[in-house]
Amino acid sequence: MLQTGIEALFSQDPAVQVAVGVPRSDGFSGVFPVQMPQGAPLPALVYTRIAGHEIDTLDGRGELKVSRIQFSAYAAHYGEADAAAIAAKELFVGFRGDLPEGTEIDNVMLVLENDAFDHTLKIYQVSFDVEIWFRNGS
Image 1: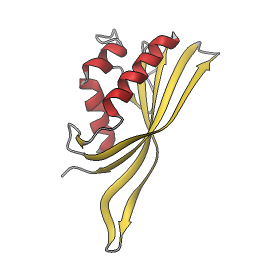
Image 2 (image 1 turned 180 degrees about the horizontal axis):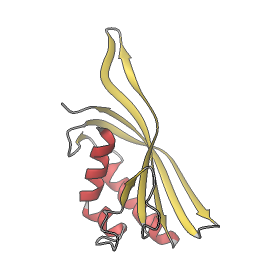
Image 3 (image 1 turned 135 degrees about the vertical axis):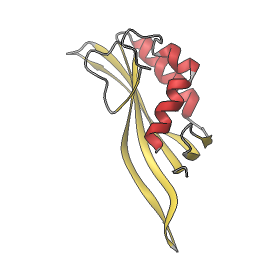
């Protein structure tokens, strides 16, 4: 499954791990699907599927799929959030090949970038969206 493969790829990448502060006091990789656990130390990277669909062919439903995934790096300081987002982009934008669990990635294209600050929590967020063309592994 795409999301499992993304988590494995990012959790094993040395640059991403440095950017999210591994080793961490919470024992996690610092890369989380959909949301961080409450109280997780920062910096951290969260990925969320925000859209997706299968590509139909003239013969019906094909194996090729497209998903839009948003990656958000969170940190107490902007530079840390930006560094985590940069490490993630350098790893994944333009990626082609197999993810650790077997998903075949045809292409990963950068679609959107955004910075934000949460005034209540006092944390920075640096986000980017990618469009991923892929086939599930066998």
